[in-house]
Length: 454
Image (cartoon, rainbow, N blue to C red; front, side, top):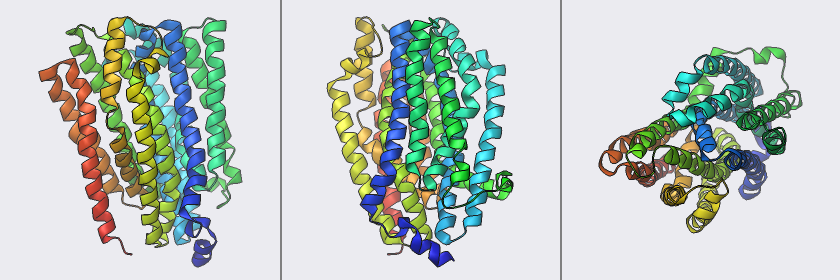
């Protein structure tokens, strides 16, 4: 039975280039559409309300990042174990893994929604909201908090659907929600004159639709057939899922810490600069959304490679693991380099899409964007390597690579550089971190392949 599964699954014999293309393109499209509708959301808010609206959504963004941390931990961890067990020939274990991940996502989503609503104002203040930004951020987050359970479910179940080999359906579920959000944004904001509340409700409705589409896929899984008992959370599987997805949690949770810290540092040091506090916070939010476009493409490629890594490592086809990694790094680096050129040549034109501002606003925005995105080519390699390790069951190594970037390097630089260079120090912390984290990731990868059987 085990050998039959290994032989029949195309992950084990189909050419790696074709596999990566078929699995990655739908993931890239889904991620890119998801990223773009967030960008379009910001464009509508910036055009309708101004940069204070963009600043408000930036203050709210750590909550989304927390959802990403939890959702990707359970989703990527669940998908990794799902494919590892299939590769070993144990479909029953794959079923229990996916069911435990899905039900846990629902439970945590409800708890997180209630918590955010109870502690809304202190959360916004702790995330760096100034007096001008607080009102907008509370209105926006107060509404989007209703969508947290649906957002969390969508983030986590999407990798499970891809792990079943249906990357196209996972893409469609996200794309439909994104298109709906893009349609509802201008309708609610400008036709009904709901302002920033309209953008929030558009987001919630689109999240509900995407989550529903992913929920109804479970009876259609191709590699396994579920029963209701499979969705009863089992601690044994949950521990395994969390261990494999821990690198994703570390990356996203440390992202949240960095976001909150950066907002507060920009608030403090911006106040003592010619730019004030509101401009740096708004610009940081916009540049982060632009960066999400780059991240979406790289993660789509990595997510496409993940089932190939997991299945072939579990089946001991180590030569295919190496081949997949070489191809992945070439493609991610090439795409990141193209984006780097675009971001460096046209920063003002890109920033202008998000609304008007004075001379100081565009001066700071252009400088921040060029510096913040200076080493995205190296960052693409670091992200690929960090996600590779949990895909082959080595969660600690993946967590270490992620932790090195966000907490061990970036966080200390954020706390140190502004003391000497003011608000400029906040800007330069990210590219310095990208350079150091890239070096560490390469060392880990070389060492892994050195001892991996041929």
